[in-house]
Length: 308
Image 1 (tube, rainbow, N blue to C red):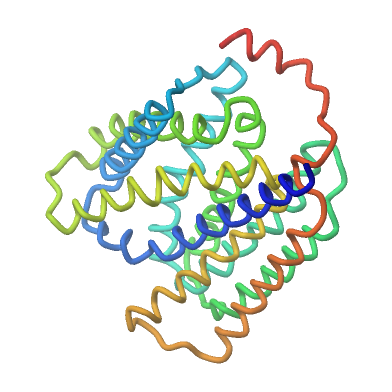
Image 2: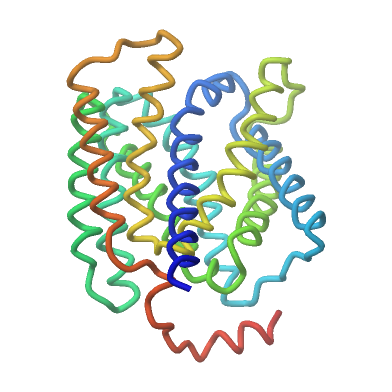
């Protein structure tokens, strides 16, 4: 039993780490859509991701569970802030702040999760998770080099961080009730509908070029369907506070992609920051995972199941 638990934990860590690497390395792909309408592009991306996830569920002989009444607010909040809102904040923040500054502020996400998730659940923050998150934040700041901002740059950067945190925070309870794949699927479906409706009014539709089409397919299949499912599996197994430290790997992966593409050189300072992030992840992932903790009595779970 202990061996199986350890194996599951390692799988969850690998899943969360792979998700962060995918997201961090996908920045150049996202940049290929700079000239494409934001909302309709997101609608197409998430619609494709939903189709892939529905196909995966069908291949496994399962069915998509219907959310209960208490699940819908979390799903809608996750979509509007953690998905559509996050993308918009990232794009607009970089108009008023250097990418390094946005990355540095975004790097505080692990610390916010390490503190907020336990407090919301009515328990004390885990010391390893908080210490690991602090080390990760320091590593991200060193790695990104800080940067400057003007106008609403600081507000937009903080909004980006809040949106990133909400992507995990809103999902904590609903993932426990529906499962990671189901949450990812419903979020993609909601985002596709909302993005399509809003995009029709603001921005309109247009046929993507070959370059934009490739970007949409990669983002829809890899960054959405694959990464979302892996991340929520990691959150369910490790707990959102511990899984959050793995977010620090995103700028590390972004650095690796930039170096590989020749966009920037690998400096000793950047390497030191990457090592610090890795050490913070090791520290933050120590201790008991979410699945190891005694289950909490929740009188609403039975009601939520009956609603479905």
